[in-house]
Image (cartoon, rainbow, N blue to C red):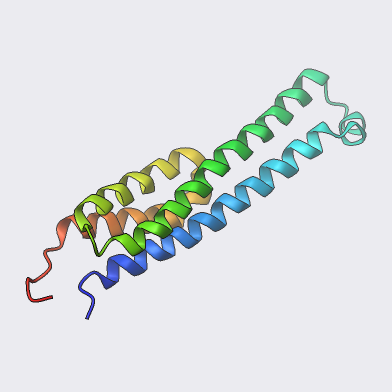
Length: 132
């Protein structure tokens, strides 16, 4: 029996949903950048060029931040398999990455962030019996 099964499953789900959130952020930032860079859309909307350039660059910033969130999601996925080796270290890393994701892609990170924070706290708080 695996003594850290709950933490493993929570971190694994956090990693998978973090990858999904990162990909969603990349797609939405790319679409936002493409729409605001298109002269057809912006000329019909009557937007000023400075506002359009600012919105297009914001879309590019969203893509960059979402790529970082994707990397964090992949790291959480990998940490799920490393929790058995050193639960304290990877519990702290899982907890930190769960919190950092909220600063990157806010609402897209709700599910993976909460799951990663819970898994990190469980890794630090739970004492595993010695007979495992």
